Length: 178
Image 1 (cartoon, rainbow, N blue to C red):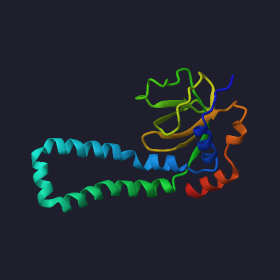
Image 2 (cartoon, rainbow, N blue to C red):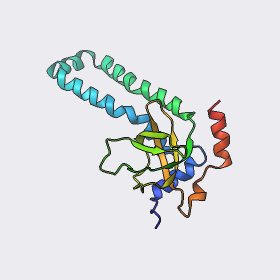
Image 3 (cartoon, rainbow, N blue to C red):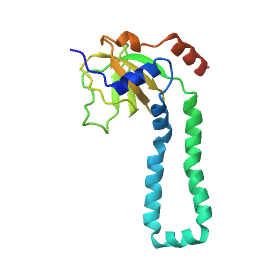
Image 4 (cartoon, one colour):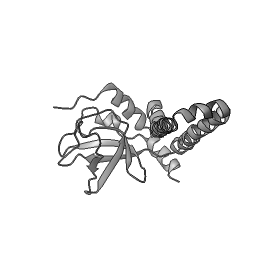
């Protein structure tokens, strides 16, 4: 019995097979550091407490300007970086112990055909339960600390041929890896 692929995953697979990110994937990968920055900003406001209100009245425009720069500079840098990032494709095996939904804090690990481990620290793909020792078509971005999982589907799914990379994928990959 084949796994039911959610519509959102199908849309992502069709975009990724051409070497492109969907608009939502692009937004998600760019805005990822915002959560951390906003958490740090909230902590700073709590620590400063009443002094923060005094700072706001005296130098509101300076604080707003600094805040905007602190938020926009990382976003602009990430937007530039990921606009040209190559999308990678591989047929990977889920292994003996695929990560379950409840283990969201763990990174997803899969194996190449040669047995090398590929870790995905970030997941932008909708959740799809992985079957033990099954092969999957996987699209991802490479990062120094682990990959970003974009989309995946079982390699033996009846629609799998429609989700494999196209010639556009190969051209775009070559252009972006120069």
